[in-house]
Length: 140
Image 1 (cartoon, rainbow, N blue to C red):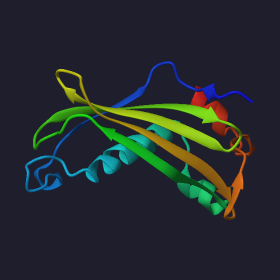
Image 2: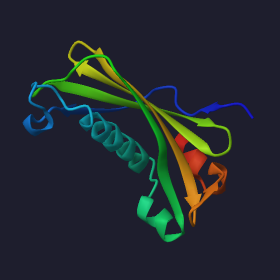
Image 3: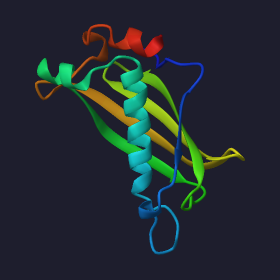
């Protein structure tokens, strides 16, 4: 099975850096970027009406199994930035989130992440197309 891309245009969410997210060097701590990426993914999925709590009540959990981040440029307190999200299916089990952070207004690439997600049914890996309407929601 070939990989399947779901979006032509990325989902976008704008943020600004808060003082407490910076380390002693005055730049955003590297671990904080994962929070930015996760919040954007959650907003993307919520916008697609994917209900984490409802799925969990059915024994289905969507989890992150791998995160790869390349850091290119540092953000500082007060910086405005944009997080983008695109998705693609990889095989039957994995959903890949390709995400970027761009400093605004110059649209300078700050970092790139590849986040791999999988679905678990009562703790066991499951095919994504088993989740009713899941793949269709991501496409629309």
